Image (cartoon, rainbow, N blue to C red):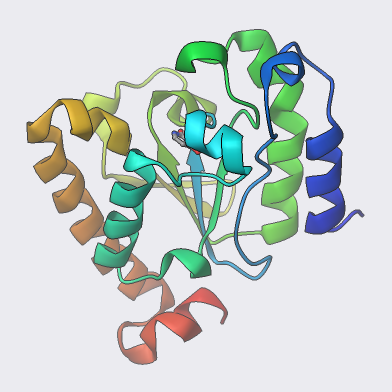
Length: 195
Ligand code: URA
């Protein structure tokens, strides 16, 4: 099986959908293969496209703050997106683009084998909770295929709707309790990330 670095090279060279024509950089994902916690966002934005790294713009800064509220350092988690290339003008990824990219995400999850997956926003939520509404299930954990999966609002939504900021902070505070239970309260973040 290819490792994360080889997989990243495949993503970087990918031409499976039209997004390869408009991207500056594909954005495979960031983080250690030993990560026990994985965040899955939607698709790269402008800054991510420029630098080839996920969640480094305004919503990424807020996500980093939220991850810290959950008791982890960003570098301990694996962070990626459903779609690895920026859709023009940040439109929603199209179904065929999600399908074209799906095996990359499947392989990342198989290689990392995280105990906990946090979906960030509607598009990644749909992978695990296809018929649910984010307003109904945000912050709740479910066991799916041997992992805990938690759906969160997208931090970008909170930049436009201030009330969601509090909701996200409350949900990530609750995530901290869940992670403490999963990985051990007193072990410290380093051990929590790699058992
Ligand atoms: N929004 C996302 O969903 N992913 C990113 O990497 C950046 C912004």
